[in-house]
Image (cartoon, rainbow, N blue to C red; front, side, top):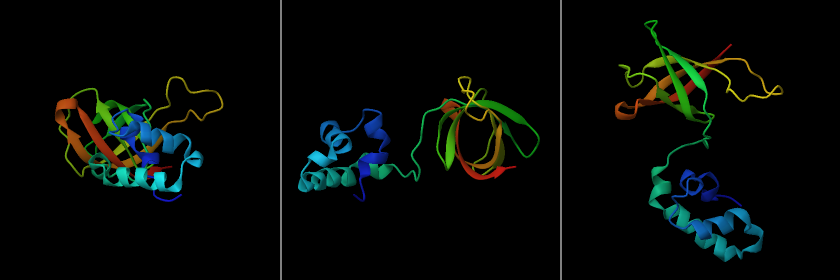
Length: 149
């Protein structure tokens, strides 16, 4: 079924959805619902202001990874990933830093402490661009540009 808005809704996952019972039924047991009921639920999601404000292309997962952010001037800043997706990450910095929007940075992403033996534990280096700066929370949003070999 196309346009199942609830499948990527972070508000539903976080328990902030205004229609949690209806969405839960559509998400968990869509095969037991009448197609007209699915249509009503789809309309609810499509017109939900919270969904319309959500402009992410990729679903995000909350996974903590330690990072080192390298600036073009050679300075490094340590931090931790709050959540990450295929297209970018939200990063909480250890210390306040004077960063600029649209500044290009290099991220060194280290494996999580609980990584299993079957999962690759190598450091990932990726070039990113700072999209948003939240000074009061010491957080920045970074869009990934390309992985560095």
